[in-house]
Image 1 (cartoon, rainbow, N blue to C red):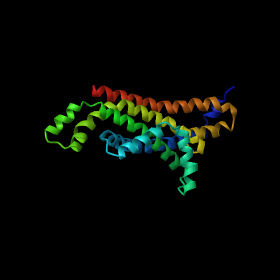
Image 2 (cartoon, rainbow, N blue to C red):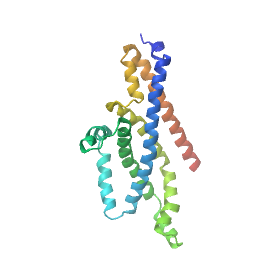
Image 3 (cartoon, rainbow, N blue to C red):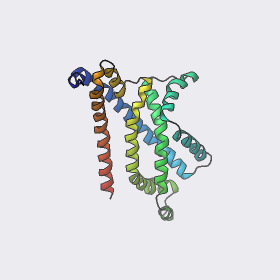
Image 4 (tube, helix red, strand yellow):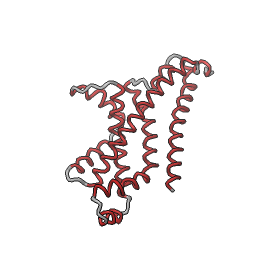
Length: 217
């Protein structure tokens, strides 16, 4: 028999909430930073700056084809070997930002490429510089088109924070495992609650994405 009452004791709920707050903190910081870096990298690749664009292309393709778990291991276990030691929180954030920036940069680049080239020619003929055309004409339109895939990537990022359990980051899954280790009858109730907590946040993001997409239409 599963001990739902014992699993949902106030002390356990508080402990899970503490882990969930760490999950949200890691996700929020990673989302903000990866969004900024993703836009910068995507724009540079779109503008095809000599040498730099090619180097970024190689870097992005390399990162996109590596498992996120490997990047987490690298930031936490390998970087100290070269004198850069990060604590668990910053190692997890760094790994997520590296991985998600590469993923988002491709979304940004594809979004920019989807804009009709005729708009660039029209803007340039009206006296705008290439930079002004990109900033005021192309990028705003592209970002509106990119909302659904970007939000979808943010949802994946939130779920990917659970991988930080491998370096014992005190996030939601880590705290759930600690509670489950106390009593085998807690496993199903705790995982049901953890799934519900992830679902609430991710479903809210999905609803936000749909609403933004509807407003654009």
